[in-house]
Image 1 (cartoon, rainbow over the protein chains, first blue to last red):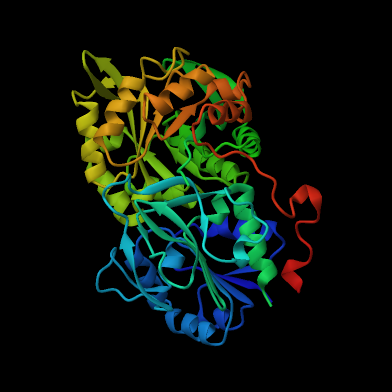
Image 2 (cartoon, rainbow over the protein chains, first blue to last red):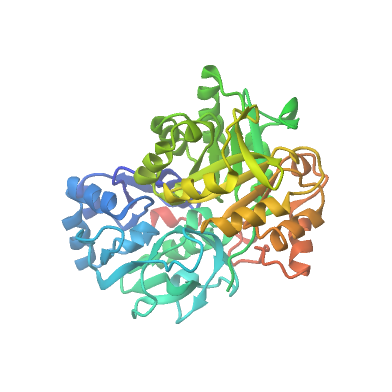
Length: 201
Length: 272
């Protein structure tokens, strides 16, 4: 079975695809709900605007199949905006509803730091994380975002600080997410994607 | 936990080849962009910038092909630009595999271009490139590869661009570019204090000390250089070690589990 990379009509899909394939994974660009229903795992990549993302999912009728996949325990990895879309809502698009796998809201980074948060940063481990297995403390990952999920939720297994602490890696049951771009984070990012692939049932 | 200062090699591309000029003129061939990019990726560069300096219609298609070839070699961010006139040009560059697009001349003529790109792709994908010459106590932006004076003030223009959605400033000192006399740290400090987005310093890098100066006195978030990396007079690993030894936070290579060198990277993961 293949890994479905959700194609919502924008974003960095080719680089995520290339990174997963270079690790030996079979991938398909999912634009139809059926492609999600038959997937072994789902990757939600994402750059751009929260509202464009959720609208892209809606227009392709992918929202309900993502929820169904979640309900049936299919592993889902959200990347950057893909992580943010797993939350209920975002400051970036007030009134738009996210996938709401998590109840919290995605917030704007505070005005006392440079924004967007662009560049390579380190993580603070909160608890044991499948995605970070074997990766040394102090490893750097590439971030490029202006909004972030709170680090206070149980799902936040690693945090990063940029003005405020925020969720850098999330895990809860079959849901996983990273605020950074593993496909752009060199060997450390590749190790995260390898951990994701190795965690699949 | 600190945001690392970035080291960014820049590929100036003309007709599918990397070239390097001195003060925006006198070009010479420096090699194949994809090969150089692969080397920098391996050596621990934090990002690669590819700029189309041909700015011709025929050059455009070749450049998009160059971006595709370079993107395939990278697992770090790629920024591309040069001759971006319209939204569609920026879109083409991003679709070809760049993570960010730089705008310069066209944004001076029509600042709305910045807002349009930021709305469509997000601020993190929009880099305003400013080429400046010192003018007394301030700096004046120039367009068309350093040929045309704009009459603007660099700090004011940077601030306006950020308010329109530019997510980073790529700041080149024309006076210093290719002259190997060091970054203009006063310039980068001035712009870094003016705008709330990262500033990438460019122009004049010649020695490890120049990077140390631009990250300390210059308050730059990233340092960009071309010729000194291409000709391998300075290696990126040695530069990063030099900076780390002096307390500058940089991303150093580290030993990771299941390194491709220590085992098979594709042990049947896709078929299980």
